Length: 104
Image 1 (cartoon, rainbow, N blue to C red):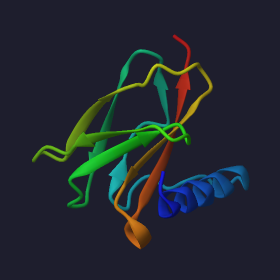
Image 2 (image 1 turned 90 degrees about the horizontal axis):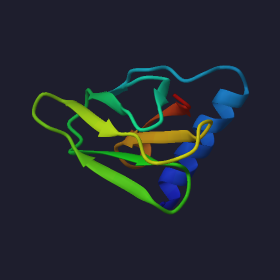
Image 3 (image 1 turned 135 degrees about the vertical axis):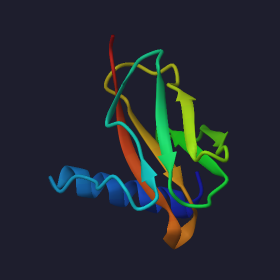
């Protein structure tokens, strides 16, 4: 994870812990929870070519955005309660949503 992405993830976590939550929109929309082994549909409102999914560690999966701007992403094999960081953009244009993985 690069420094800009780490900063964006940290800022998103601070907002969530402060009880302010995160606004869905501004170029990225998706669910707040997903089921283990399922998929999530992410809507990208910007012209970014990829959506990245991370658990906050060094591994990040990248998914191409099709012309319809809706991406169906498989939920990574993580335990229930894990928070996924779904991002588009870079630097000051980065958009982040947090998605919690729940057990089936």
